[in-house]
Length: 363
Figure 1 (cartoon, rainbow, N blue to C red):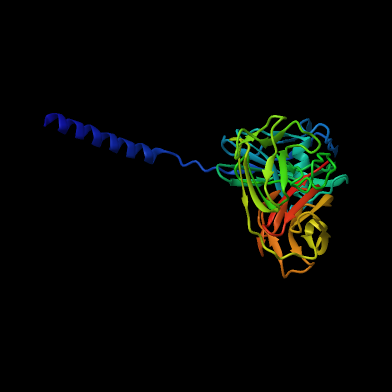
Figure 2: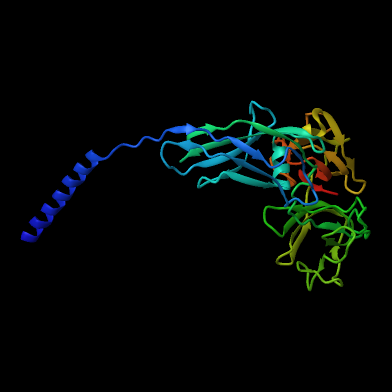
């Protein structure tokens, strides 16, 4: 009992002393004294080099923001196409009071693209620095400076492996030349190494290749039906009769399924791409209908701008297909606009019976 009384006494004394010391503390108020000043851009005329995307392109340096007490200051470097920064893009940030940032060719090229700069044209880019502490507290904005920058046309990032159908059962026949426009890609899926294709096959056989113009990476019939082989001497996957089939492929497990499919009998006079990838939403880019399968449409080496689009039939909005997925997906009637993240040259494939589409950047 005496021990408990003694412990309670010590605890009470500690609390009282703590309260007394709090009353004696001085409340410190942080007050900004000056904003950062953009002191230096390492160049005033920057022509970005696509041959060396990782090389340093520019360094931005600035004076530190000043406060009435020592604090860790964070900074963000912002760019804009206008001096008033009506629209802006943050290109980099620092912590621990670091007052400089360097950017590579590809970083500056991507930044220029985000604020709408045109490749191959010198344009004025504006810079400023924003300082803050904590989470956007005591924010201050520097003066504005600028430089002339010429961005380059950059290929989109396409980290996918395509499979193309080849064989006398397919539109391509056994011609694996790179310029064979009848080499049709399977539809990629959200799962790596898994593909599907629903379309017309003739009686005969087929394989799949990864690269147009090469037999080095091929998938043919393995030891038994349903099994694949990557060997150059693999067999042909057989098709017993003309008709529509659904093919599913797993290149990791080296397995496949091939079964009859029912597709719509509706066909269209034409199918086109409509959207600001054409420059506006009033212009159709016509696809070419396959003579092998009337549901398959394609266009090769077409120049499209960054933007959005849909597929539509008969140059009208009565029937249109879309979905919010870049490069490949299954478009649905009246779906979202399909995004295209970069101006470039593309091969485009579309199946009006299934909605499956594939968009492949080409050199």
